[in-house]
Amino acid sequence: MTLATIVALAAEESEHHGNVALETVGYGIIAVCVFAALALVTLSYRNVANRHAHKAEAYARAHANDVHQAGHGH
Image 1 (cartoon, rainbow, N blue to C red):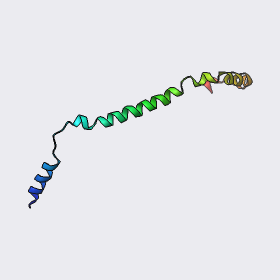
Image 2: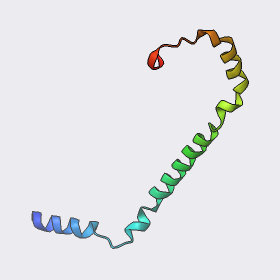
Image 3: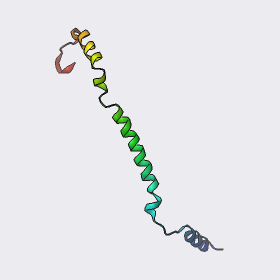
Image 4: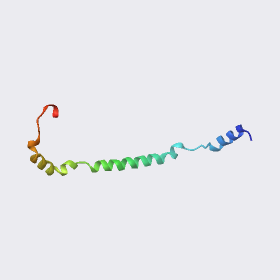
């Protein structure tokens, strides 16, 4: 066998005619599942600051005198 026939046979063997889009649907499904899980994690942190508003107000009252008024937020 010559190199040319080996290459020709390998190319013929690996060639298949199928729907490439159907072969890659799994990647899309996995991506959608990952993004949905990330969206749920993001939504779980929604409104967290308001759940502890009483703690924030108590801290602000306790440390009201600690605020130093210097220029440009320093």
